[in-house]
Image (tube, rainbow, N blue to C red; front, side):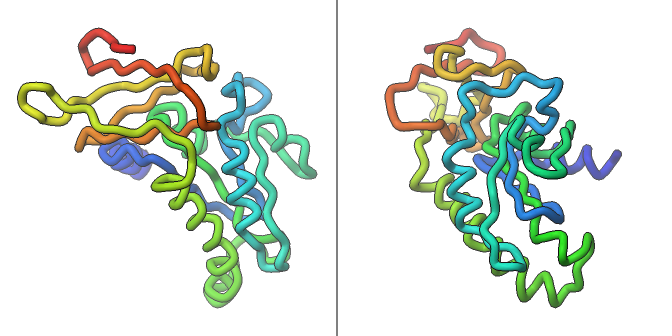
Length: 207
């Protein structure tokens, strides 16, 4: 659809570090991949414990804290079902973006709640979660970050950045790409020593 083409073109142009897709309803955060029955999941799961942190900071319209599910965990909760092709999956697979989806609110509110209900209950309840996600992107979550420039001109150089399979299994060839200004942020599961590969587009890779 033209809308999806425009949306994905915009995402490719900014290459976000994190992304939060908002849906209704279920009081759940989720992470790639939604089709847990047919798609190999990244191993080890890179979305814990950040997903748990987001869920604990978010409350639905009944004042209940959210839960976080990743991969097969989604099918383990009552009513869970596989989902393929959603924006969280696409962003993680195509851009390496740390993506989460949030099913906002409880089933008591209905699928399309009134504006006043959204304003008074859902937005305030979700605020802690997206603030925690932004804080992780900028300051308080383990990540590889830097900027890649040409040594002669100092102009930004577009690169792909991948973590070798010894550090994380990427069954669907997930990889990061730096942003147009050359900067990159690759969120990782834990602190430690990481080996990663930088490959300038159209040139040999560097480790």
